[in-house]
Length: 391
Image (cartoon, rainbow, N blue to C red; front, side, top):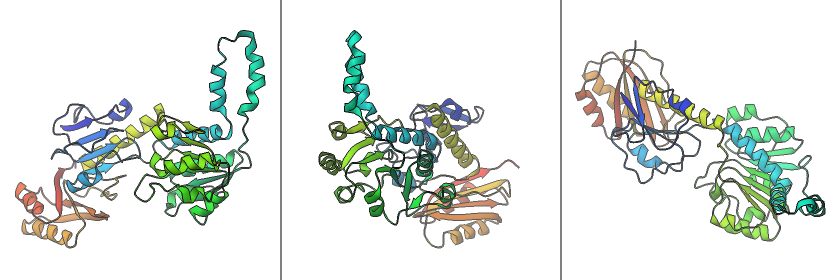
């Protein structure tokens, strides 16, 4: 019986992908094979030796100790694209909120409660205070052309906007999905200097932290609107406050408010609702459950942030899975141990991602505990599993 620990509420339609006759699921599981979560912060957790995988029902993994997991051979999965449509729709909402002072108008209308027959006249008298502009014909700059960025860019085109995009690492899949009408910016500086609206769609990393700062604000058009549905740390708060005060930034819309942001004028704060739809939560839960099942039962890896995508079609009844540091002669040492034990390698796959590597090896007969112990003795090996596959 495989054990799955939940650290957050996970959509039941995803948990249903774990058959009850083979999986135990709960919040108080001891010695779990896998952990599934959303926003729970794992950094202070002790990772049990039993742990094989961590599955994040969402794209961001900054709440998971990736290095600690990698050092124990624990594969960390996320669900890129599962909530893309939900985030795209909220970004378009943010685009309209940035163009028209809808939020301000709503707040004003609420102040008129109890004024009886005077309400219509007060509405007409004050509506000019909340005037905005139309987005048609304006230029949207999309920074980051992953699945969400591509969907936002294409949707903005449908709304009549001019769209320019920038992503030095755009994937082939994203490029295929991006409309040919989206113009390519030669660099980030060129994009921010020509856009009326800027929408950010990238993960928060050491490279992107504070990417939108004073130097970038100084290049922007006066009156630019900025949408941040990625992560708060991508925009430097101190520099943003100065840009708003100097009227460089007309309005800032973010799904990641903090105390500093909440104190700023001309900021629309949304309480991290990007993926908060029933459909997105279900999609993420289903995807992460399938990924964890495939890894536990077959050793296949898809959408891992710390290990490479690996999939090997079944070639025998026994499979050896070795997670190791990406160092030379690993395959040779494993092969030697198997050969000395008179175990034939039917088929194998070796792939690496950064400092980590994975070996999926289909063998002629079941490796013994002694063989597993010998493989663990190889410097750099962090996890060894023997899988008995259905024939």
